[in-house]
Image 1: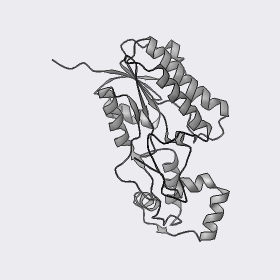
Image 2: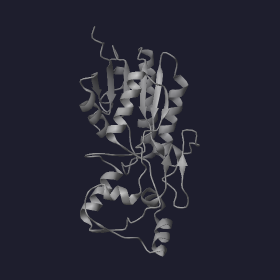
Image 3: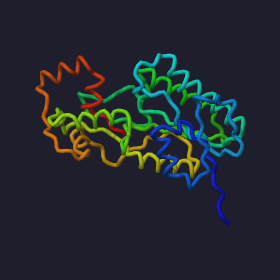
Image 4: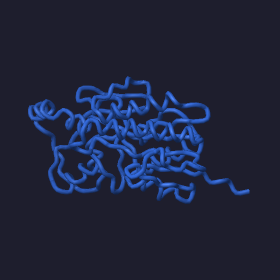
Length: 262
């Protein structure tokens, strides 16, 4: 007897993760793509939906978004969607959160390793709005409404947007780059590994909070070299590095800081 396919509602289906998930698993599931830009959660049809993969979000790369918009999209919209889904009999809610809930872009001073039990002290509205959504989901979770929270670190893969895309552009333009650093390491995750983990949680209806990551953490030098372009890599003079760390702390921590998860 053929096993019944699960029906998965995917929000944010036009985004990088959504498109890749649908392409990879469209034969395994009955997938319903929805746009929360054009539809209110209360107006969606949840009939027969087994799980919701909630990817729609306002992310920190979207420069210039007003503070209120992060909470409107990442917190309130998630709350409305989850509340309606639970009332409609959906059994599983998978929420893409972020490691920004930990409130750090990395450390320039120490080897920084975080775990699921590390304090969540987000510093920006992106991280704060995501953490509030997490807290609400945990409040309404029951045996009949299981919640899975996924906190990805930096994601990479073909046509990946965000910080990896910016780094790729730099590598294409400049033959000499100040990325000859092997001390710092960061946890990152390839989109395929991220999707495999997500699929595993859907199949097994596994509850809890998870941080997907590649087995090997990488230095900024290794990340740059992984793009396959021959570039001359140098180091900043120490005095310049220290000045940049004061002027642009977030940028420098993101590029050269140590941030590992286990």
